[in-house]
Length: 389
Image 1 (spheres, rainbow, N blue to C red):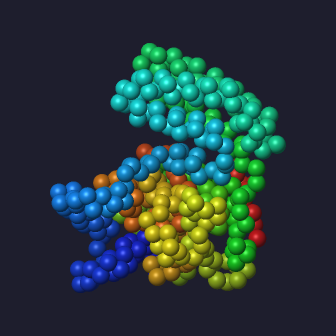
Image 2: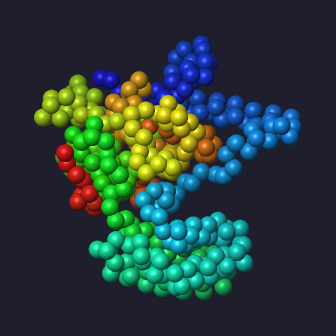
Image 3: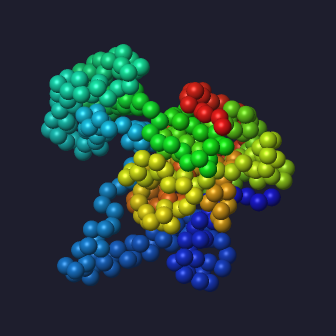
């Protein structure tokens, strides 16, 4: 049986780099990424050692920040809202854990005070972006957020690192909830070519019970409505119940969704054919995703997607290496290794559709191996956002 494989993109990239006989057989992904990382380090050493003023542009073009590894931050940033006040609050709070590790108490105190000031003095501007049906709930959320900031200010004043971090996380939960209450309508029209496919027009949460324990997956239909819709629909059908993780590469990915029998994916009884979904990737500068082709082919090489493969537990649709629009039921969970994938140089970004993240059960995920069984998968929230054709 054909097996959809995220490794194939590595072989394709190797070919495009004209590495010739070096890749006459498929290398393991870890080895290939390791080689890229070593090559990158060698080139960087040379650039830094021999750098002249004329090479400043080359150095400036290299990644200047580390990748965001927290899926909660990525999901907050992916929400289609345009309220500068709440985004400023969000960004200031998200910086605090790292500042706390560095004991930058003066900066921390200033940022928290600025957050409190924004929430109290600009509450009208914040609430003006809220969907009318969510107004009352948003007022309550804002009040809860303000209450959470009181003990946070006290913990900062006492320089208590153990209390600051959990209070920041609690505050950010309310920020995320408030931001979700600002989403008024689905922000774009999915192309008519995909009208025959399920679409997730919003967010949903899947609880997947495995023989090693449960994990929760947050699906983001705002960024990939067709792929997230395909996955959510198959979950509702019970398609994944009883299947095993049929492909794996330690510290790189886990893959499941290969049904028994000869089919490579989900066979739609209405057509008698495997139902496939297109490559679907949204970038920050566009409201709607780019469909049908890798980002490099669409003219967006080295552009980081809204849902990047930078967080442990990134969910993505697998597809045959020669057909980016051939994904169906097989999905993979990306197990990020920061030492092998430098920020901004991830070789999976732009070549596969990410449609969400594992947001609970990280320890369970770390214990899952090839052959482990999915006992059940259930859509526990957001079913109302799943639109059938």
